[in-house]
Length: 139
Image (cartoon, rainbow, N blue to C red; front, side, top):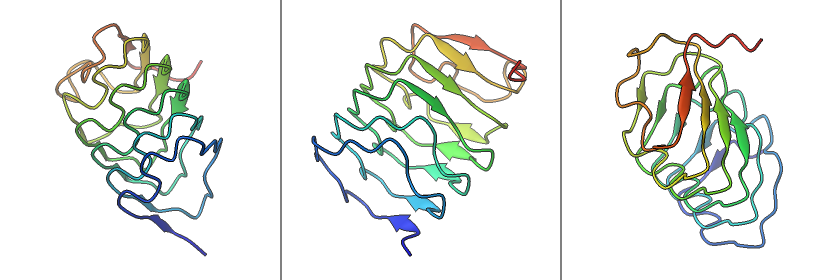
């Protein structure tokens, strides 16, 4: 059974239209879904701890993402130019989010974060149109 999606595995597979990933996936490497313009995931497997650089860059159909509780960090340009992305929800505190993780996500207007303001540096991480709902509990 597959537990890792390697570097650039689906690079520019514009017809790839996945809505979910298998829960046994533990690692998604850099550029894995770069340019997969029809990818429409709404959540990531619970065992993902890191989102590497450019992993979802230019995935235009991503609209709303709920991040796994085990997520620790999001690298630079991880979601760059995901113009369909409107809302993201963190389900636990992360250690690090690159200041450019959501660059070019011009329609990302809502970030739900369960931590206090200032707990993760660099907010809003390139999402210049976003409002961050700190201390979000999902209610």
